Amino acid sequence: MKKLILVTNDAQSCGKTSVTLALSEYLRKKQIKHCLVHTSVDQELPCETEMLNLEDGINPSEMVQLLGQNDAVICDIHTENGQDFSVFFHKYGMEEVLMELNAELTIVLPICDDAEVHRQALFMAEAYTGMGEFVAVRSPLLADVPEAFAGSSTQKALKLLGATILSAPELDETTLNLIDEMELTLPLALTQRQLLPRFLTHQLLAWDVAWGGGFAAYPEHFLPEHDKLDDLGVESAYGQLLSA
Image 1 (tube, helix red, strand yellow):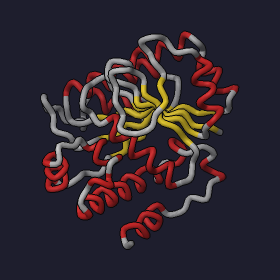
Image 2 (cartoon, rainbow, N blue to C red; image 1 turned 90 degrees about the vertical axis):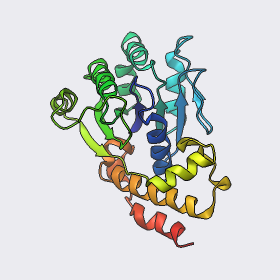
Image 3 (tube, one colour; image 1 turned 120 degrees about the horizontal axis):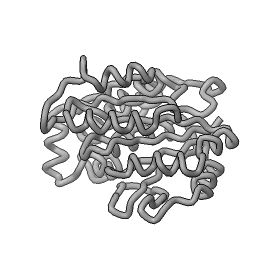
């Protein structure tokens, strides 16, 4: 069983790329052959990725080829591309294609306590309803217009869809300030660790451990053939690096 994971929310700066990179690191530690995909020429992921250009139109054979070459494919769907990607899926009957490829679909919605992020998450939930399983990843990001997740229409809609709610680990303010002082974004820091001081490297590694623990709690959403995998403790695998 292969896995296609879509990370999508048409709100800006809601943590899509950070979630994508954290998930990729988790799969790498589990020795899952996978690739990362981006969907727009305006999108820059600070790592090696494949391109599925929604603006020019995606050929279904491109997705089939990526799934044929990998056990898992993670798509970081660019802001404002979320609805278009769902249209592509419906237009070309990709649900049936996934069935033929023995592949499962997981839709990951990064959210935080922000009104626009909630609004766009609801649009994504509607667009992808019936296509796969939902996972909402709550991030402790600052909000432009605060709106609590608890009791919100977003929470109610996700509950009706049977979505899994996963809390993203929080980085302390000192770590975030150091990244900012180095004129890096979090995704850049995650992929350019050789440039970071040892303290910051260890803080990000501990953050990876926390992410890994969250993903490991729901292998059915993130791992292909999860029931046949030897689910080694993520903490122990990372712990060897932390003690090195």
